[in-house]
Length: 151
Image (spheres, rainbow, N blue to C red):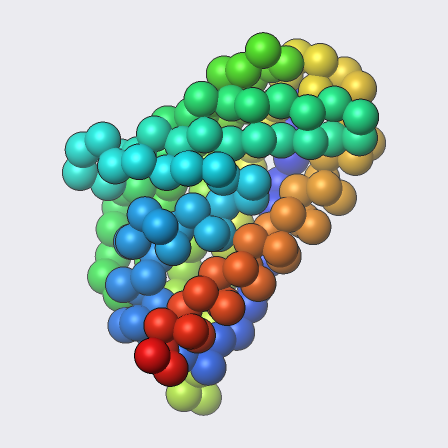
């Protein structure tokens, strides 16, 4: 089952600071929906432990995250894939940063697919859940980066 997520957010933080933050594994884990851990395993490559809950089904995915086409400080593309006992997940996307009126516009787009029992049971809930998790992830990111700005 294919899913497309697209979200745009605005931060009152300089673009260069946002760029630095989205390369930091601890902060990057805040953005990724339900990412429980993100461990570097090479240049711009990470092992990720991601938990997905769709309706009554919860699955843990051992995943790989790869950042590529880095364009400092404007963004990058990424791909993620993972396998778990409840199915598989795959996705590609892009984070784009730009400055608008002294604020940073943060645009996230991704397409992905899930298969296995999670897809069969949660078919109608997947996109709505993905958008909700993205918004939660961004709020976590915003709180984290704002706290580092004021420290």
